[in-house]
Length: 476
Ligand SMILES: Nc1ncnc2c1ncn2[C@@H]1O[C@H](COP(=O)(O)OP(=O)(O)O)[C@@H](O)[C@H]1O
Ligand SMILES: N[C@@H](CC(=O)OP(=O)(O)O)C(=O)O
Image (cartoon, rainbow, N blue to C red):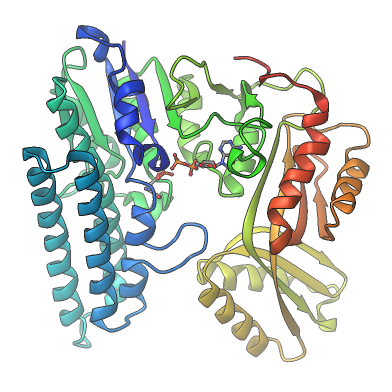
């Protein structure tokens, strides 16, 4: 009878507080056990190792993949190492644990650096193509982030007298990859959950390639697989805040309300906007095995948090969350030859996909299509250039926008559109585009990037604060 619990990167960055809340707190003896913890890299580390998740700013991987000179990526790797060593210092000061933490990470980074350098040299010969190996490099780099945080956590827990065990799923010294299922079975078969506390890396090395299949947010895949494979009684995700009616960082902690219950459909909408309540693919396994999923505030362990289930629907139509995504690019393509030609959409979608740009939404009229995409500025510029080259008569315009979205399991609130528009107008915000689908789970407003935060505040005020929900919408 055990639980599987994931700790997100933002929370991991406040590790010493986690020791007093979810990791140890008031627990003694056997109360400490029967809990498996899956940890993410400390906040911002994976962004430095790969690329920034939201802005696309290049990290070590992106610099390596873009075949810039060697110094560009190795300098970036040294910066990550410096940041990791700094974290070790903050956690352990000048202790034995600190020396062990530094030794561990120095070795991992040194190994990866040597491999990347050799690979770069090898691929300077025409017989070897860098492209064919990039995914492996991406995986190796990502895995360092979770190995660092998991290893450190074990050091800190052992020091505090907990029988913690480092479960390294990153496959570091493994001769041959196993499948995802086998890797989890193999790694957990000898662990006694009743007397050991497994601290598991959020990255799993496996023959399917976790990064290839799921990319960022992969630690939730590891988490969900462990929960299903080990037959957990509950799966818990610990975050920095309660899942709230809006980002407390924007609207203010005093103004938001905790969401007590919601469904996987709402979670998918959040994830599309980049606020991963739970990775949609991770949710699937939990849903199928009917393992209850709970999202909790890592720093308020007594609070029941949010329960996500398949069948929940709010008792009356209401807006549950104002979410959004800043730093979106609107790529608008106007071409009179487009009229009645479906191939444009297919070709353009493929082009954006090939450039690894994520299409958050799109809209069209008779002779234009606009794609709202997230990704790096460089790739967006490339997309604009390629589209201009491909379609002679097309005019391509680029807009820097943000998406602000009202979401609810039943959004059929009378007059919601009018309320939304007037709230934004009252705040002096001009709406660039508006989307609402027939299914009525989400309504999206496209606004200028500079208006993002004020639009979130205005909509939260008009659609949620006025409703007087108290502390929690539908207690779990
Ligand atoms: N509706 C919301 N409820 C709670 N937090 C939110 C919400 N929207 C945005 N956030 C922000 O999400 C951040 C946590 O991001 P996330 O990527 O989920 O973290 P983690 O690294 O812990 O997985 C918080 O710092 C908070 O500001
Ligand atoms: N650290 C990884 C994996 C992850 O899932 O992170 P988080 O749990 O902080 O979203 C990433 O940024 O993609």
